[in-house]
Image (tube, rainbow, N blue to C red; front, side, top):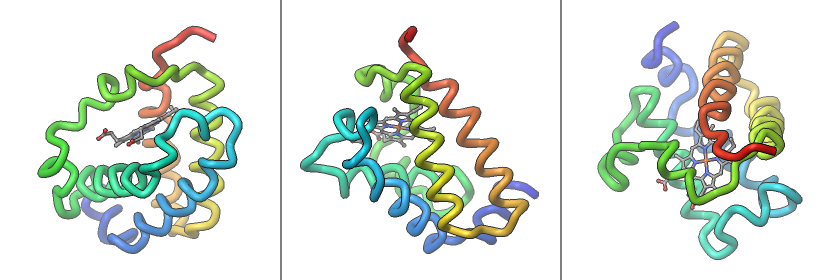
Amino acid sequence: MDDQEIFAAVGEDGFRRLVAAFYRQVPGDAILGPMYPPDDLAGAEQRLRDFLVGRFGGPPRYMEQRGHPRLRMRHAPFAVDKAARDRWLELMSLALDEAQFPPEVDALLREFFGAVATMMINRQE
Ligand code: HEM
Protein backbone atom coordinates (compact mmCIF):
# COMPACT_ATOMS: atom_id res chain seq x y z
CA MET A 1 0.00 0.00 0.00
CA ASP A 2 1.57 3.33 -1.03
CA ASP A 3 0.93 6.82 0.30
CA GLN A 4 -1.68 7.61 -2.35
CA GLU A 5 -3.60 4.49 -1.43
CA ILE A 6 -3.48 5.50 2.23
CA PHE A 7 -4.94 8.88 1.31
CA ALA A 8 -7.59 7.26 -0.87
CA ALA A 9 -8.62 5.05 2.06
CA VAL A 10 -8.56 7.77 4.75
CA GLY A 11 -9.59 10.90 2.84
CA GLU A 12 -9.76 14.47 4.04
CA ASP A 13 -12.53 13.55 6.43
CA GLY A 14 -10.58 10.67 7.97
CA PHE A 15 -7.56 12.89 8.69
CA ARG A 16 -9.90 15.55 10.06
CA ARG A 17 -11.48 13.04 12.47
CA LEU A 18 -8.09 11.62 13.48
CA VAL A 19 -6.46 14.95 14.24
CA ALA A 20 -9.59 16.25 16.00
CA ALA A 21 -9.55 13.15 18.25
CA PHE A 22 -5.86 13.77 19.01
CA TYR A 23 -6.21 17.47 19.83
CA ARG A 24 -9.32 16.88 21.96
CA GLN A 25 -7.01 15.12 24.43
CA VAL A 26 -4.17 17.65 24.39
CA PRO A 27 -5.43 20.45 26.69
CA GLY A 28 -6.09 18.02 29.56
CA ASP A 29 -2.76 16.23 29.26
CA ALA A 30 -0.18 16.91 31.97
CA ILE A 31 2.85 16.62 29.66
CA LEU A 32 1.57 17.84 26.29
CA GLY A 33 -1.07 20.34 27.44
CA PRO A 34 1.43 23.00 28.57
CA MET A 35 3.50 22.65 25.37
CA TYR A 36 0.79 23.64 22.89
CA PRO A 37 -0.43 27.23 22.34
CA PRO A 38 -3.64 27.52 24.45
CA ASP A 39 -4.97 30.37 22.31
CA ASP A 40 -4.23 28.66 18.98
CA LEU A 41 -5.12 25.00 19.43
CA ALA A 42 -7.40 25.22 16.39
CA GLY A 43 -4.44 26.51 14.37
CA ALA A 44 -2.22 23.69 15.65
CA GLU A 45 -4.92 21.19 14.74
CA GLN A 46 -5.10 22.62 11.25
CA ARG A 47 -1.30 22.51 10.81
CA LEU A 48 -1.07 18.81 11.71
CA ARG A 49 -4.12 17.96 9.61
CA ASP A 50 -2.83 19.82 6.54
CA PHE A 51 0.61 18.28 7.00
CA LEU A 52 -0.79 14.73 7.06
CA VAL A 53 -3.12 15.32 4.11
CA GLY A 54 -0.21 16.64 2.03
CA ARG A 55 2.22 14.00 3.24
CA PHE A 56 -0.10 11.26 2.03
CA GLY A 57 -0.75 12.72 -1.39
CA GLY A 58 -3.74 14.98 -0.78
CA PRO A 59 -3.83 18.73 -1.50
CA PRO A 60 -0.49 20.39 -0.53
CA ARG A 61 -2.01 23.05 1.75
CA TYR A 62 0.67 22.67 4.42
CA MET A 63 3.51 23.33 1.96
CA GLU A 64 1.64 26.27 0.46
CA GLN A 65 1.09 27.92 3.83
CA ARG A 66 4.11 26.84 5.87
CA GLY A 67 6.74 25.81 3.33
CA HIS A 68 8.90 22.73 3.69
CA PRO A 69 7.92 20.93 6.92
CA ARG A 70 11.43 20.67 8.45
CA LEU A 71 9.75 19.05 11.42
CA ARG A 72 12.84 18.54 13.58
CA MET A 73 13.70 22.21 13.27
CA ARG A 74 10.12 23.26 14.02
CA HIS A 75 10.05 21.10 17.14
CA ALA A 76 13.37 22.45 18.44
CA PRO A 77 11.69 25.11 20.66
CA PHE A 78 9.78 22.35 22.50
CA ALA A 79 11.41 20.02 25.01
CA VAL A 80 10.65 16.66 23.40
CA ASP A 81 12.10 13.94 25.61
CA LYS A 82 11.21 10.25 25.59
CA ALA A 83 8.30 10.82 27.98
CA ALA A 84 6.81 13.47 25.68
CA ARG A 85 7.33 11.22 22.66
CA ASP A 86 5.64 8.30 24.45
CA ARG A 87 2.71 10.46 25.52
CA TRP A 88 2.25 11.92 22.01
CA LEU A 89 2.11 8.41 20.60
CA GLU A 90 -0.27 7.30 23.34
CA LEU A 91 -2.75 10.08 22.48
CA MET A 92 -2.36 9.40 18.76
CA SER A 93 -2.94 5.69 19.39
CA LEU A 94 -6.24 6.49 21.16
CA ALA A 95 -7.16 8.81 18.28
CA LEU A 96 -6.45 6.00 15.79
CA ASP A 97 -8.59 3.62 17.85
CA GLU A 98 -11.41 6.14 17.61
CA ALA A 99 -10.95 6.80 13.87
CA GLN A 100 -11.40 3.12 12.96
CA PHE A 101 -9.41 3.05 9.74
CA PRO A 102 -9.00 -0.22 7.81
CA PRO A 103 -6.45 -2.45 9.65
CA GLU A 104 -3.73 -2.12 7.01
CA VAL A 105 -3.96 1.68 7.01
CA ASP A 106 -4.08 1.77 10.79
CA ALA A 107 -0.89 -0.31 11.03
CA LEU A 108 0.98 1.82 8.47
CA LEU A 109 0.00 5.07 10.19
CA ARG A 110 1.10 3.74 13.59
CA GLU A 111 4.47 2.81 12.09
CA PHE A 112 4.78 6.25 10.44
CA PHE A 113 3.89 8.16 13.63
CA GLY A 114 6.25 6.00 15.71
CA ALA A 115 9.19 6.68 13.40
CA VAL A 116 8.58 10.44 13.08
CA ALA A 117 7.92 10.88 16.81
CA THR A 118 11.22 9.20 17.67
CA MET A 119 13.01 11.56 15.28
CA MET A 120 11.52 14.54 17.16
CA ILE A 121 13.28 13.68 20.44
CA ASN A 122 15.63 16.58 21.13
CA ARG A 123 16.27 16.35 24.89
CA GLN A 124 17.69 13.75 27.24
CA GLU A 125 15.37 12.68 30.07
C1 HEM B 1 7.21 13.39 19.65
C2 HEM B 1 6.29 14.10 20.29
C3 HEM B 1 5.76 15.41 19.74
C4 HEM B 1 5.56 16.54 20.48
C5 HEM B 1 5.78 16.70 21.97
C6 HEM B 1 5.08 17.55 19.56
C7 HEM B 1 4.75 18.84 19.92
C8 HEM B 1 4.40 19.84 19.05
C9 HEM B 1 4.08 21.19 19.42
C10 HEM B 1 4.06 21.71 20.85
C11 HEM B 1 3.79 21.87 18.28
C12 HEM B 1 3.38 23.34 18.15
C13 HEM B 1 1.91 23.40 17.87
C14 HEM B 1 1.58 24.39 16.79
O1 HEM B 1 1.43 25.57 17.11
O2 HEM B 1 1.48 23.98 15.62
C15 HEM B 1 3.94 20.94 17.18
C16 HEM B 1 3.74 21.27 15.85
C17 HEM B 1 3.72 20.36 14.83
N1 HEM B 1 3.92 19.01 14.93
FE1 HEM B 1 4.49 18.05 16.58
N2 HEM B 1 5.00 17.02 18.29
C18 HEM B 1 5.40 15.71 18.35
C19 HEM B 1 5.42 14.82 17.31
C20 HEM B 1 4.98 15.08 16.03
C21 HEM B 1 4.86 14.10 14.98
C22 HEM B 1 5.13 12.61 15.15
C23 HEM B 1 4.42 14.76 13.87
C24 HEM B 1 4.12 14.25 12.49
C25 HEM B 1 3.83 13.00 12.21
C26 HEM B 1 4.28 16.16 14.23
C27 HEM B 1 3.86 17.14 13.36
C28 HEM B 1 3.76 18.45 13.70
C29 HEM B 1 3.43 19.51 12.74
C30 HEM B 1 3.15 19.34 11.25
C31 HEM B 1 3.42 20.71 13.45
C32 HEM B 1 3.19 22.11 12.89
C33 HEM B 1 4.56 22.72 12.54
C34 HEM B 1 4.44 24.13 12.02
O3 HEM B 1 4.07 24.29 10.85
O4 HEM B 1 4.75 25.04 12.77
N3 HEM B 1 4.62 16.31 15.54
N4 HEM B 1 4.30 19.72 17.67
